[in-house]
Image (cartoon, rainbow, N blue to C red):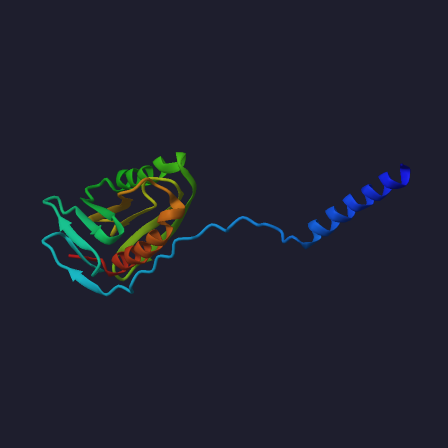
Length: 188
């Protein structure tokens, strides 16, 4: 009886070894990533009765109001860049605090805030561009001033629940447009 039990045990072990060695390891299917490609923009100058002009992408539409605030809409991206204008009337420090406060209100949802200073002395433009990394409502914000008469601030919003990973390609695309707006903005 002992040799029979020994033979059965060896047969079971052999079957287990042969069947486990021949099977391929099963791996989960990798996650698919959305590939978004946007056409390179061409820019057009926006001229208004406001104390500043700038260029925007041909994929965007600008709508000014009576206060010289402008809403730049990106219909295909379901995004808008809201720019406000305020004259500087001995209140530059207050305007800068308000701009910074708007950005740092997002720290609850932000993983990080990266601020990049901008300065063009010949065009009398000083400011900062801030990227809010994380699931914040506004992933890009900026302010720009000549320090004496003009102050503009802006924030980017999407018509979607803020999911940074999903909107990142659109954020990076609009960030280039925002940099172009800042570089081409001219005070009147």
